Length: 198
Image (tube, rainbow, N blue to C red):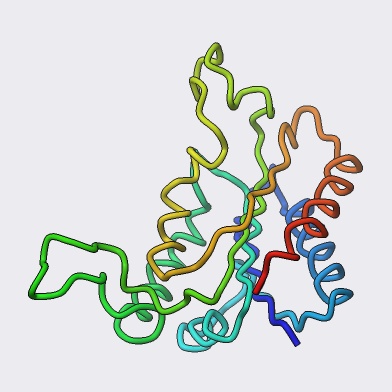
């Protein structure tokens, strides 16, 4: 049986209660279980144990991050999670240091990951419209993609050797939401790309 670890990175705000991210986690859980996965979930608003979170990463064939994008990155609660869990896993669990050796101290930085058989997928929710990305004429992102914006998060997963699956994103979720369409796209995305999980 394949194993999936879902991280709900939502951070509660009075204007953003987390209903969409929770619904996407619920939908992902249902699809994964239907495909024969065992699923474990950690939610940032709940308490967690650092050692148990490391073990969930080691256990999983797929790490699935569901999170809103706040101020051009992941939420502060998920950043705190990474600071605690990923730092604790640095030496022999999630990676063997940063990949460098005393023989080549200037080479191979970030290549020490232990999770090379683990895939990851990010599912993101944005206030920004989809049209703000991949368009040189748009002011803020100036032609950059969603994955360009989330490059640091991709590097965090790559640091542990994880293999990327294509990112999913919902856009304009506060001003012009299209939740029904987003859910259909999300379901199709998962059915298409989960086939790539080892």
